[in-house]
Image 1 (cartoon, rainbow, N blue to C red):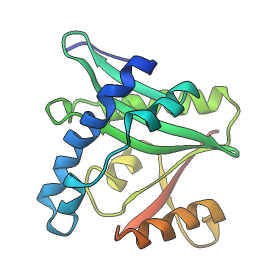
Image 2 (image 1 turned 120 degrees about the vertical axis):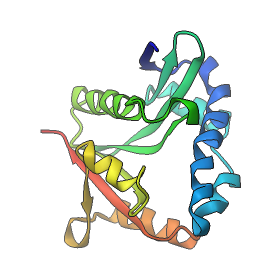
Image 3 (image 1 turned 30 degrees about the vertical axis):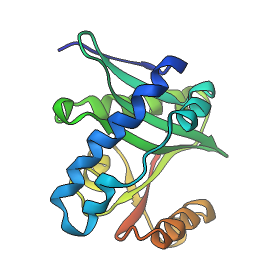
Length: 170
């Protein structure tokens, strides 16, 4: 397997919703989160706007094509990760970590302060995965207004047990 991480191109945007949908099938194993597997995914058009901003990276297999992506956005002094998704048949191979490294390298080169995200606190491929990749949960006084607002919005959408995480650039 030869997987290359690169910035996404406009032509990649059409493949990203299906990758997100495929990765979301993992939630079928968690009864109270199984609904995520059939929930809406980010549209190709929405991906295109971030592709244009050079904050979407894809993992491309030499034989299969695009098999994963990381969709982010620079917000203030942070690069915020909105989604990391890898096709089910390519998971557990370090692709997600490589995508995170590419986003982190971009944030460092851009002079940003941190990479942030929100995720499920107790889902193995969420907060524990990000913790293994240098992120720490941000709570209490460390939680800024933007991240606190995202967590409130996600709670309103019926997404329980969410947390904010941050990986500083230093």
